[in-house]
Amino acid sequence: MIPLAEQLRPTTLDEFIGQEHLVGKDGPVRKMLEGGKVTSMILWGPPGCGKTTLARLIAKYVNADFITFSAVTSGVKEVREIIKKAKERKTMFTQDTVLFIDEIHRFNKAQQDAFLPHVEDGTIVLIGATTENPGFEVNAPLISRSQVYVLYALNDQEIEKIVKLAIKHYPKHKWEKDALKHFIKNSNGDGRTAINAIELAASIDKNITLKVAEEAIQRKAIYYDKKGDWHYDTISAFIKSMRGSQPDATLHYLARMIKAGEDPVFIARRMLIFAAEDIGNAQPTALVLATSCMQAVHMIGMPEASLILAQTATYLATAKKSIASTEGISVALSDIEEENLNPIPLHLRNPANKVMKSFGYGKGHTRYPWQVEQETGVKVNQEYMPKNLKGRKYYKPDWK
Image 1 (spheres, rainbow, N blue to C red):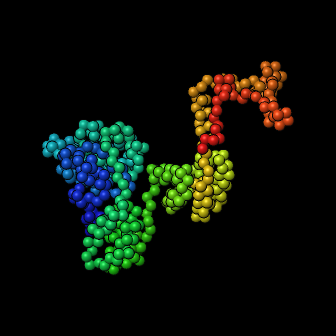
Image 2: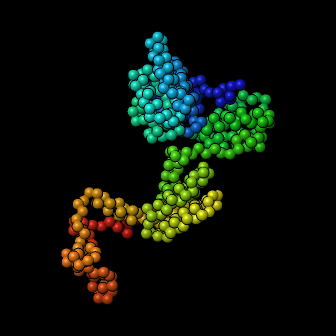
Image 3: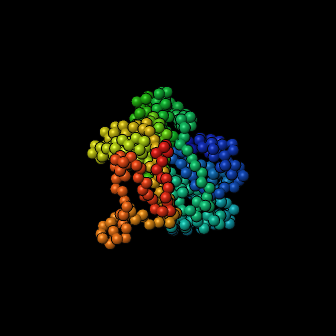
């Protein structure tokens, strides 16, 4: 039996749901296909957003032979066979070959390089699909010869269209509104998840109630790759929300990470860095609390550690902010790189022995200037900077 997802696969761009920025009236993919020419490309987006379907449509629109290739099960032998047939097809029938590689990020460098010359000479049109950032996972030469298109998770309205199409295949079933809402809400922008849930629900009962829907799609499947962009994008949004003093957004992104199973120690470590980097001496207790948070997360573990993370995150988000220390050390480090390092002033050096003392180490140094000032009322003008950096200011407490 053909799976429902395959039965619902669109056959024209007008039937394609979502990705209007690519296939809409002025979308670059539509314009390219209307021009009758297709180039190699990388389709980058989350699961269930239509990458494979779009690749098939592209091949169909330009009347090209569509071939799928697996990085896991195929090797050099299969590559040679595909190239050989593609050349024959182009010579004998002037027909292009679209080679579709799902999860192209799983290809190693040697595999990717094997296709490169054949992409260059036009023997094949390569369409790669990936959920990972191609800038990190795909070879630079292949990227430079391909157009990268970003696809997005489907919104609720688009998922609703897919759900309505899916239930038409079960005219004898009764679908309650609450059940359909549950499918839409819990598909998390993944069209394939929605279709599979409809298909499973239809096999469970003819009367699809909310309870049946909950059995078919038990919980929201949050797509979150701990080593990929979703990992970095979410922690970035979390930090930026704390920096922007937005506790509600901070809790939202924290909840995303907790729900997706992010390492709580990683979250606590990032908050510890944030306390020093973005709050600093404006509210020094932030660093103390963040340190305690990290220790507590180590000791307690999940799920209870989520309470500790939430308390600390909201404290950091609502705390006063200062980047004076951060900017100060940044400028100081820059000077170390760019300026000549003059000798440390003699009076600041350590007079560890008689020889050093004879050279003037420590001579004339006032150990406790503040004490002299308190006792005499006279300010001690003692220089601490190397000669060429005299008067240089790094720490500016009023730099908020």
